[in-house]
Image (tube, rainbow, N blue to C red; front, side, top):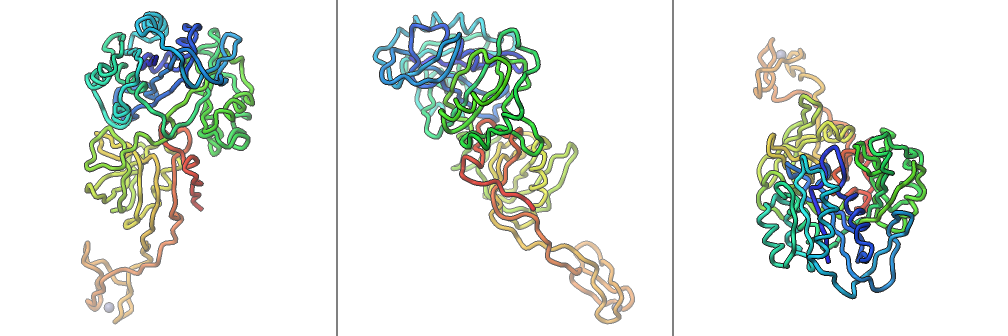
Amino acid sequence: MYIAADDTDSSTWMCTTFLATELVRALPDLDLIGLPRLVRLNPAVPWKTRGNGAICIRVGEGAGHPRWMGRMDGRDLFCYARSKSEPSASEVLDRCVPVMERWSQTDDADPGLVVTPRPPSPELYRRAVSRIIDKEEALAALREVGALTYEINSGRGLIGAASAAAWRPMDRTYEVLTYRRRERWGLPREVSERDIAQLDQRFPSTFNNYEHIACRPAIVPHTTCPVLYGVRGDSPLQLIAAQASIGSEEVDRWMMFITNQGTDDHIIADWTDLAPNSSYDVEGEVLAPPRTIPGGHVIVALGTSAGPLDGAAYEPSKGFRDIVRELRPGDRVRVMGELRESPRTLNIEKLEVKALAPSAVKVSNPRCPQCGRRMRSAGRGAGYRCRECGTKAPSAVFRPEDRRLVPGWYEPPVCARRHISKPLKRMGIQSTIVV
Ligand SMILES: [Zn+2]
């Protein structure tokens, strides 16, 4: 039986993953089948809460080898590969509703809870991770599999809950999430920054841990939610070891999730037109020198098969903007990012410089071939002219520009990345360094 929930948290309180631990806790007579899922949906949805993440757990009567995946109330948690029997959907719903009501932010959230014996069509997930879908589409997919639902307020969370249950992990990663003791919620977090800084070295399959340039940990949230920190990576066993290596205040509980974080599942590669509030993989040619606009954002005009398009590196992407500023007209690039509605820009999440165009910088006005004097501009696009003898010359004196940029992949620093964006590390690519 699948139990899925979404939109239970607000920007200031709670966390849907904590609700997942409370659901597990409320069903001690049932076994977890597979790992709990943390499913990030379209990050371009305008009304998302913090990370637009929904959760789904599957419960039943475990068969096969138990797999260690958490600890809560002084006991280890395990999950199983498959289930021997199915609990009653209506009983499971009745037991989960009070848990969701207790741990939801009902003032400014729209929680949705789904209990279903069969997952909805994977097409629902594919659409919800990359497009904007409405509640009716989710409800139709839920009806097809005979799901039971419960909602609070507008129940918009049913969209995410249904989509999380619909996810069939293809590319996937894992996250170990740790939670704080109740009396510590809202207080400053005590986690060893030194231990976090060493994760990349000690546990190479983990990612998005630490901002090595700004010397900042990226795995500790800054909100008042119950999460202490979360470590992401490709190996569940390494994540358990990584978590044990981090010195911190007392961990009240921890749980391993299987997730679509770091997969680029949100990117639409086979697009025919570019609609806003989705993310795309686009190739193009730089049309004009990049410009910095108020707020420190860097804009680069691209010519693409869909017409001209402004790529944007926003201020929070910090040093990544310096790379975008190095682009020159004629450079061929591939960009992945979210197309915003207004201003209509493609927010660059990853950049591949495919080829550099020859670029030249002006050295001086030309010298007159007749009298040797320095020539003056004859007006915009009209070349140069000697004021003494009237001789004309077509262009100024240029020298080839010494480009700092080299072809290769570039990505924003850890703190500016989307949860769902695939880090270059997971693509087996070393981020290119600008010299
Ligand atoms: Zn002259």
